[in-house]
Image 1: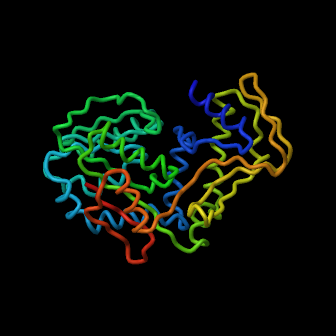
Image 2: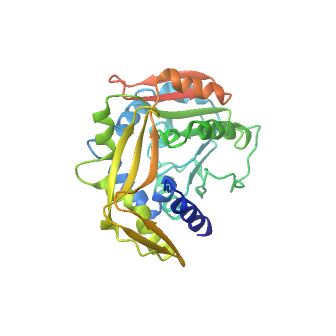
Amino acid sequence: MKSFLQEVSRGLSKKNKKLSSKWFYDFYGSKIFEQITKLKEYYLTRTERKILQDNKIEIANKIGANAVIIEPGAGDIKKIGIFLNNLDNPKKYIPLDISDNYIIKIAKGFKKKFPNVAITPNGYDFSKNNKLPFKINSSENIIIFFPGSTIGNFEKNDAVKFLKMLKSKFKAKKIIIGADLIKDISTLISAYDDKKGITAKFNKNILKRINTELGGNINLNSYNHLAIYNKTKKRIEMRLKSNKNNNIKINGSEYFIRKNEEIHTENSHKYSIKSFKLLANEAGWKINKTWVDKKKLFSVHFLV
């Protein structure tokens, strides 16, 4: 966990303290996120699933025959199952997730449902420029499936770099990508600060991991979950606010967190159809088709 320690140390040493949201996702954190996707307040998952379900034939036709589908940050891999049976002789499905134990376990059950598709799960941190854990054949019909509005977790410049990397490194020919839309602030805040406190538990899992994996001494009750909307940057920001002075000890180093000081843990940028088109164009992609639900909460784009 060298990279985890390095990133935590770097993030807590900053004046404006920050931890990457990717560290939410160990096996336990991934299971918590599954719970979040089922919450009434969290409209994103069910809305995107309905868009995919309603348009699965058209999506399959656009993907084409003999597809190799790669899904970075695959999570519970349920969404690909919506249209996988509609594809023309899919060649391979490669789900990638930062939690290798989680994705390998989830994929076992998935293989039973789709015995005719070669499914090869891999642990992989797509936020780093690491070597791919599988070989790429650029002559194949390579499709990137990137649902869940995960693109919203990136700062704009990083989102552009990521979309460019999908073409240069993954050799993608097409992308199916979900993007959450700008909407009323109360709906957004509720989605990231649910009444049951599941999202708060998810946010604090990063502190729990510091304790269990890095030998930290953090009292989780000393931090409160916050979800705020940044109007200027059009994004939800998740933070952990210290409710007292805290002296965190990790691997021989100490980090002082003042009372009311906040640790920034996640961004979730929201887009309009126009702003997402500009983002895709800047990264060298064109929108071939956009699907939106009736309430205009969420969008799915087909990029070529």
